[in-house]
Amino acid sequence: MAELTTMNISIDDQIESNCVLLDLTNNEPLVLQLARSFDPIDLIILPIIALIGVPANFCFLFVVWKTPTMRTNLNKYLCTLATVDISVFVVGLGERYLAYLSPIAIDAHSKTFGSAGCVIQILPEFVYFASLLMLSLISLERYYAVCKPLKHRTFVGGKRTRRQILFVFLITFIIFSLLIPSRAIPTWYCFLYPQNGKYDDFPETIVYCGSISELATLISAICEPMAFYIALLANLMFSTRIIQELCKWDIPKKSATTGYRNRGVSETDDTDLSTSVTSVSATQTGADDTHTPSTAASPSTVKTISSGNSHHNYSLTTVSNKEDMLSSNKQKLINKQRSNQRAVTRMLLINGLVYFLCNAPLTIFYTVYTILNKFDIVIYNELLTYAFNAGQCLFYLNSALNPFIYGVMNASYRAAFVNAILPCRDKK
Image 1: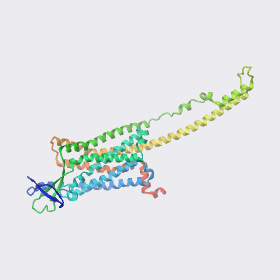
Image 2 (image 1 turned 90 degrees about the vertical axis):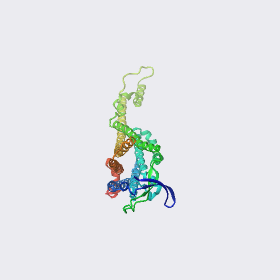
Image 3 (image 1 turned 60 degrees about the vertical axis):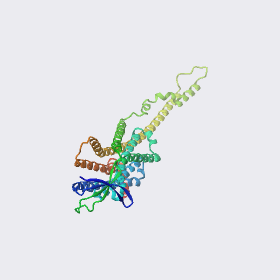
Image 4 (image 1 turned 180 degrees about the vertical axis):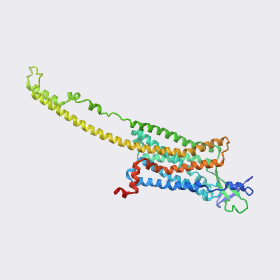
């Protein structure tokens, strides 16, 4: 059994702290358990995903920057999400690979960052919550664009879009701050290794990150999965309403001008000014005021009335044709706008679905593990490792897939990509 004592040590000849001495001179199996082992997930699979995801997200940012028509409010959100996805690889994988500088698996970057290594260790959580909230903001924007188009005009805009993005990062920082007391409190350990020459390169001091109290651990255990589940429910609600509204767009509606065109000319004869004026002048010239006006109209009057009616019919036909053209052009414009909205919305719905499918396993696993741990139910370490690594792979895979979803699901993004990457092809 390892002996634990407390002694005072100096860190980098400047920082004084309490160090817990762990005597492992007669416990080599525990040393082997604490030693870091080769992980194919970290060293093979995740780098491949990063080599695909980072260039793909940079390519999307380049296409938006190169194409003026792509600089829309929606693409501002998507560019922010792409930046967060790049940060997922830079921060997440960077933290994982920095950990390999120490041969002790539980060491929190003590050699590189000292006590601040605990904060570095949980930085991937910040970009995780940022991506979760950005995706929720995009779903909210689509909800207003499809279901409440009038309110959508007041929802998006230059300054409003920037404020919303800043608000997302503010909420992300608040959630991240709630995790610090439970997982970023440094405790220094001093190791005494077996004197057999195998562990001469192992560090004598390491930093282990723990919780400040049980309450802080409970808050962290609640906040982290709850943020995901709340975002999941909100996105489900937005997606359901969006799909319902898109289904309504497919139902043809009767034109408002159809009833007027089908009523005919007879309903408008009483209000035709040319016929009324011509009839009065013919009556006045054919009889005095003392005689009863004849009911028979003169040939000139009939001719004039007939001419007036013909002119009237021609005028109505011309107006009707113009209305048909305007109505047709307006309907074509509406159909085009709805087609674009439908394509973009479908793309983002698929994007959200892929996000939650990729991130749900890790969150569900964490929730189940927390509940079982509260009831002192032991889970095998190998099962924990496999489940955690699989969830991590899906998490990083989602950040790599987003640009490909944009290109596959939307022709406008594909065309913009071709024009930005291969401009000479467009000229030919």
